[in-house]
Image 1 (spheres, rainbow, N blue to C red):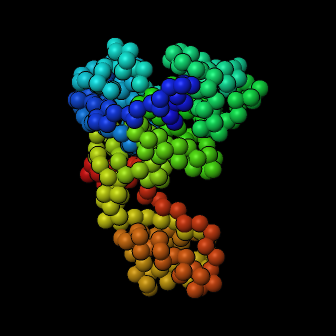
Image 2: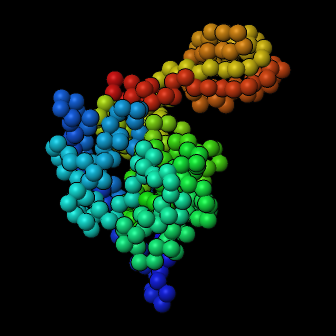
Image 3: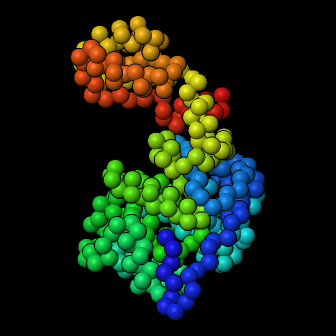
Length: 319
């Protein structure tokens, strides 16, 4: 989102490039528990996905990057300053926490307006209208936030994070509770922000979500940075491994036999109307299943990957 220029003023200059978020040797411990260990990276404009299972340390790392939590060791800079002590750096951060973090009795317009006022936005009413429009929420809704669905509350939090037009956005599991249409809309919004020159860091434990965010990914496993770089390269590591799938279809025995006969699967097991199988070529398997079922007169209801959970990714990355 780009803030509307004040009447009579020139359009705002484009955001500066370069590394906006830099972590150097960051660790965070809680007593004997090490939640984040020796993490280093540098991020410029665009979208970066922070990928990791629940409990991997993603939320703790985001809190350190925002300045809400002091690192046990290491340093963090955001837009050139320490967000813990530098108001200028902190003012360039928008945060969507994983927790609700809303005032349940507030109307959505009042909730986002409070965020604008606290951030000293010059024209808060215009900024609120623009932020709510970007997340497809009506500022005139007169229901308190506590009556909203999970997806609507998530979008209200995103609007509050955007209202002061920050250069850096940290979004912790922002798609939780959104329906498929809302997920697509918010993913498009995140892409638009990245393409406009913002630095957008989106955490998720859902592999499919991360693939939609973009190619740059930080993989957190057990508090450590297990991998960094192009998401497609990380997926390629998985595709070189034997993967398991479950197929829900009719004519299970005929389909299972054909999968073996055509070398699409290396092993199958039948459980009622479902087939569990192993394949060493996931892309070939995905493209072959539907035509094979059609040729046998079988109805394919669902195909589910059993090894595309994050724990499987991490087994491949840290083995």
